[in-house]
Amino acid sequence: MKKQTIWLDCDPGLDDTFAIIYAAHDPKINLLGVSTSPGNTNLKNTTQNALNVLYNIGRSDVPVFAGSNRLFKGEMKLAEHMHGSNGLGGVELPPSPEKATK
Image (cartoon, rainbow, N blue to C red; front, side):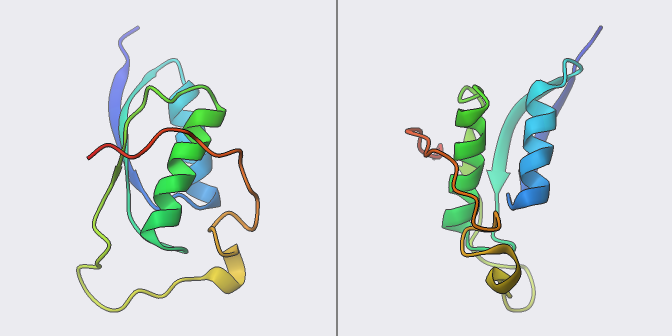
């Protein structure tokens, strides 16, 4: 079976965390990398969330790249009142020792 190679560009809060887990473990998918952007929380948090989830599921081999901290249009509106300060509803994963790739 040929694997489908994908790249995830996301803002890892709860929904994108599940997308990363799925893509990282689906035998039909080759997860080439993850790039992050701000969403429900800031870029620093979304990048750390991606690193943490990959580390905790044993896929630190997947590189994470921090994307742009600016929007193409409009102002950033974080949803910390809904998703917590880290975008994961206050869930704290054990931290990854890995850093985002430059």
